[in-house]
Structures are given as structure tokens and as C-alpha cells.
Length: 136
Image (tube, rainbow, N blue to C red; front, side):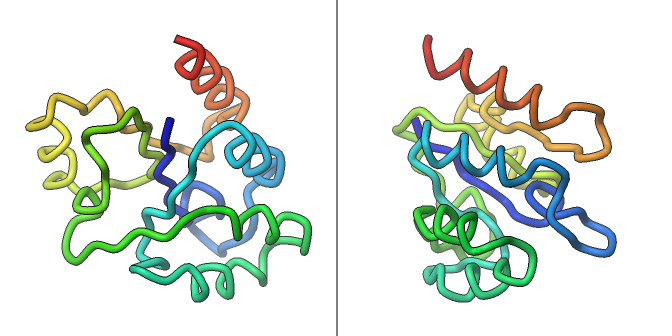
């Protein structure tokens, strides 16, 4: 199963960016359990700038894990990079309405997980949800 992953608001806090609490554990879970792809404005065809951006927030061990995440390429909407013929979930904090519409048109709106780092135990809840979906 594929995971498409945003950065800001998902791995980093949105205001005064810093690594979200327990982000390292969440990253470890994702790269071990899923085929992960960047789906962020920080990556459009080349993951080197993405990793360069993240190096200021994470330790070397976590950066090595983040290097395992594959790049995507898209122009206008992030949904351009999604493989709709595969099993996937997309983790984003603030998708555009037009991107949600694309998911709806494919009958896959339920594949979008809107992350809210202000929710208590957000990563724990995401891990439980994704573990459950992976085993079905």
C-alpha cells in the first residue's frame, strides 16, 4: 500500500515550524510498513531539496529514513501525482477543494486523511487506523 505524505502540518508544525511531537516514531512506522511518496510543495520531481529542507528539523537517523521516501512530480494539483490504480492513503493537513473534488471523482475521497497535529494523540490514532487498513 502506498502512502502519499505532505510535510508542513503533517511532519512539521505549521506555525513556527518544528518537528511535531513523536514525528520520528511516525516516520519510522510509515517507512517500515508502506511504500511512501512525497506529496508536498517541497518535492516536485526531486527529493534532494526536500531532504535538505528537513535536515534542519530531524536528526541523522530520521533523515536516513526520510531518504527512503520516493519523489513525486506534479504541476497544479497534488492529485496529479497519485496512482489511482493502487491502494493508497494521502496524508495532508490542508488539501485544496479542487484536489478533494478529484478524489471524489475517482470515488476515493476516503483515501484522504486530513492530519491535525493539534488533536490529542494524532499520530497514535493514525498508526492504529493505518495498521487496521493495511491488514484488510
